Amino acid sequence: MDAQNETAVYSSSVSKFFDEFGVELTVTKLPPMKAQLLWLRLMRIFGPALGRFFDGLGQGALTQLAEKNPEAASGGLGPMLESVAVKLTETEFEQVRHTLLQCVTVQGDAGKSGPFLRVADALCMGRTVAMWKVLGFAVEANYADFFDVVRAAVARFRASSGDRSKASPTTSSQPGPAGG
Image (tube, rainbow, N blue to C red; front, side, top):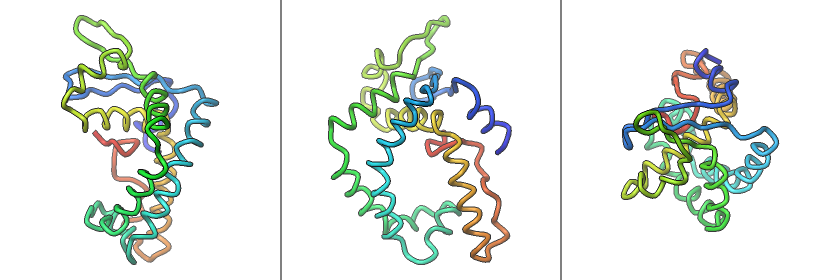
């Protein structure tokens, strides 16, 4: 784990500037017991979807994905999205989104800060992708160590596949999927 990821994992909050809004957002991490319950809920939703994603990938696609070749994902993406759409109800999505976003604060002009949920509709009006980025940021802030484990597993897979030249667990400085 590099120093930046270690700081993100062990501090109680993580901040990031969002160009889309021109403000800095801070995620105060969920208490561990609540984070574990949310993680269980996320795994019930996304676990089967990830299974369908990997089932839909062809031979060698995991290595291509690790090398950041998005075309390699095309075979598994459809089944994965279908699985999420079936599993994730509107109510469940609203509950997960609220749990994640209640921990986010926005730092506005003149040092004023407040809950992101109070200004989310105004900030994200017409910026649906930006809202997904904020959700991704909240997930990566709360579960940064999980993404380190995934990168290490991919590195072990590559090493066991004979691709020892790319066995480094990460080349990214970002702790999770939102990436910037």
